[in-house]
Length: 360
Ligand code: SF4
Image (cartoon, rainbow, N blue to C red):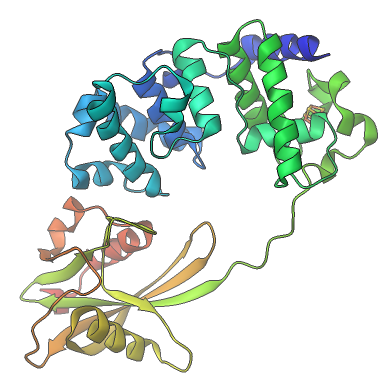
């Protein structure tokens, strides 16, 4: 069955796959870049970023030598910024330890920052034609249906089983490049999360969930707790036509990006009180909180926020000392775009570019 399934999958792919720039190259750097960008991000979103990135930094050595802020700026809007930091760190590792050449063996690739087992396999298959299984979220869904797996896909036992199945399949596949591309494409276009196209499916005769009538129940997922919703209050502190912004530490959520100071509303606190407390804690200054200039909603992977932005001015003579940032600047409104901000701050900046006499 394994060989027949691999053959059917390859025939489907060869007849109907989409054209993508990273499928037209065997450059491991370009393929690696695409694999990282495509994690949790749609193909159509990635295309523009991918082209711009490669135009600006055509080789691993170029990327390794790039300014961190420029790279974060080029990634701005793509989200999951740890991917970008890891990409840069890995490029520097490749220059330092591999003479700028992307390694061809599995273990050194897996050792690079931000590259897991599935991504390592994908890069080595797509760049060098090696036979490595891949098992991303799409592939897990496809095989949990093909095999009608009744246990949660997040369990270790199911994970082990799926790795074993995908390893056997790639071993039997006529062409490993086609096979891994086909598996990914099949998950993205045919065996999609909701309403998979079972009626016209080329793997229908191999599909145990289809035979058992359990497609809608596969993959089995453990119910997630409700997503927390945080109220965030931030200060837009103006001084002589410039606004105060600061850079988050490189580690952690949104690391290395710029932002307006502020933080989470505590129990029993009004939003202006949050702003005053955060400015005292983060900057060591007292602010007078003025009008609310924007309210912005944003969803991260594990929580949602509503960001309330207030116009503020410093009162008193305390020296502003950033305690929660690695860098800070007073920036003219029309210069804010030169720095990389997370999405909610970008939306705030769009509001700030409107007509606000208080901002000069
Ligand atoms: S028959 Fe349906 S569930 Fe089974 S592999 Fe095809 S699309 Fe997926």
